[in-house]
Length: 178
Image (cartoon, rainbow, N blue to C red; front, side, top):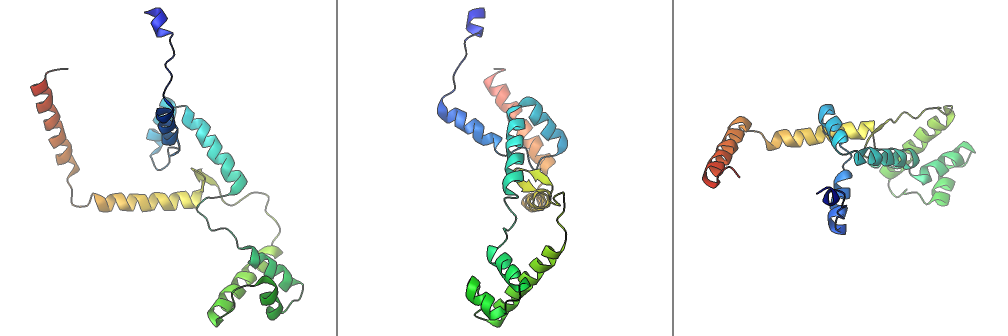
């Protein structure tokens, strides 16, 4: 029996892949106590959390909108004194309608105001979980909580649990203790 206990069983690739896919969720959107218990039981999640954190530091939040490079180019051209007609011609920015021109002009003005501010040494976006910034993580968590509340609206969870317990007891009684 001791020799049998030392034998290492290899998982098939498909089962190993499914376990790795389970770790991708990074224990996000669960309460702190459950997250700590998951981390205690499955230490591989710690490595995945570190990988997500490194990805966030390198690439930023996966859910936040990425900045449009044409806005940055237009802001730099505008700072150098280029006219709006020249900017539209050089960047190829959407300027077909008055509304598009206003949106683009406001984006350039916001970028110009950001360029005048000295660079911050620390990022304002903190890491939340799973490659998301704290703001996107909280937003997604609120949306998920709202969806769950809507799904369980009008249901009696206590009665459902009692019903399942009764079914389990009956099945155990019919099939025996095993």
